[in-house]
Image (tube, rainbow, N blue to C red; front, top):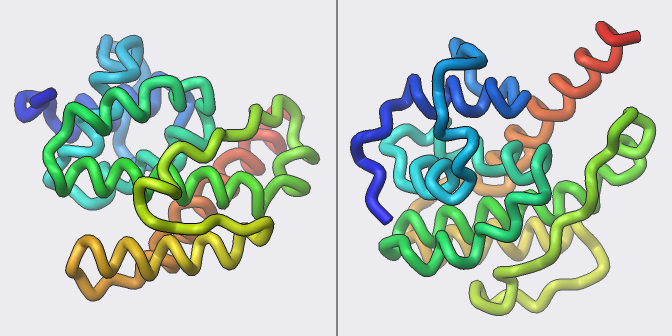
Length: 173
């Protein structure tokens, strides 16, 4: 699955159309990509922009029904985009568990996400989402070969998403 023709603006607009206010500048409407979850997930995973790849976390947090597309899309991707998708999806799984109480206090709390990739990534998941996130970050760094603070990256994505949800709840009163 190759989506090199999808622009960053199209991805930002598609996220906005799905109600995900993670990327600044996106405008709702005009993009049909949000109606094609598999193509959207693949395009985000293959993006050259880190902020767009990171948007996979809030995408899965906001739309857990997109989990159905995660495995087939991952199987269609090259090694690096596949790793990003698997790790960011797994981060969303454990971030959702970690913030369960906070999410339940908001109207329209979404369903949980099934753990699809921990075995593939070689992570023996536990009942502790914080420990799982730490193990994932270490494994992400090991498999990706980059010295990146993945744990901080995962938390950053979740915090932006949660703030947006809470602000929307306040506005909707």
